Length: 236
Image 1: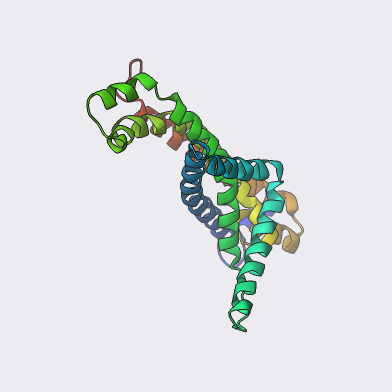
Image 2: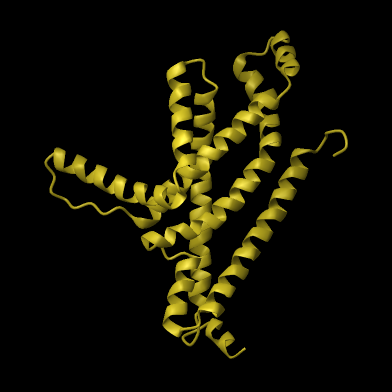
């Protein structure tokens, strides 16, 4: 109990730093979610494409992400993008030193991981829409875009929400990997606090409780979205 004072707010405690770390964790997760959803939709479209080159490219990317440890992917994006941009600057005759922003590198790396799994969720949701409804829409004279926008897309989201909700929970916890490139997220702040005060159990338990709170609230949000998506369905 004597170590609980270390978690207080103000100059004498680390509560402010932990809350700031939790905010960075949420920012990482939300930014990676937005980018990851866009990339996931693109990858699913590539896998469903009639063009073999696009299908194989999408499958190769997904296979690479799935086979590579997430920790390593984050490092590859951090150092790889920095080296690539520096190479381009050098090639065009600029002597400016480029340093990859750590937060941006973490967002891109996490989004790349999320997108590979989200692509499969979107592909499954796309194929889950009954073909009879698509044929009926086309028989009514709808264009391909109208059929997709009015028939397939709303149902795709309904089928995809459970899977995407699970991926969001994984993404939220994977933000802790950003600590390896010195992003001041929740886990890094807990690590710094534990090393400064020599009370690791107190800080890591506090971080665990904050993660539990964030995932619990996320679970409630997912349930709400699922109920809204099922409105009007039989048995909903």
